[in-house]
Image 1 (cartoon, rainbow, N blue to C red):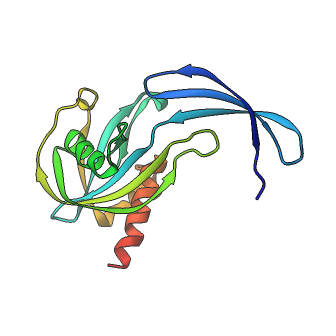
Image 2 (cartoon, one colour):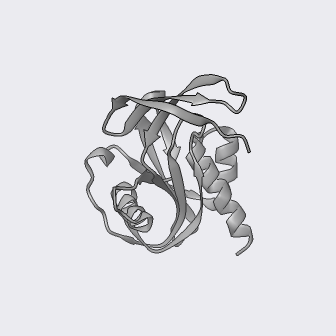
Length: 178
């Protein structure tokens, strides 16, 4: 495997959600080049299924793309927080439900070409009402979708963010083995 050796690293921006650094690297060929890297804390992505076999999705406005997107619930893991605790917190904040059962389905990098974020994917079931207020979730709308409609929503582009597509397709594959 060919690796790039980091020769230097410079922090360009240190924000609330992301950091941007520029690394100078040596390629396996010996050539030097630069890499712009967005540092983002790791997150959880959640496929939540209710008692009626509906997937709980959230509809929220995403400023970078200037539109509302239909997504699976997700959120950042706080420093020192266990991912399962993050799943429970994010579910309460974004959907108003607390999962009694949380199962790991896998995980993936969201944008490995330029970002460090890794998403831990979980299945959340046995949901009980338990809302938790969070400042940045006030405009999120809960949408229940039958599991059977998920493939067509992905194919039509109604679900169009990578984490939701990856998470839902992983769940659909997992469901075949149950």
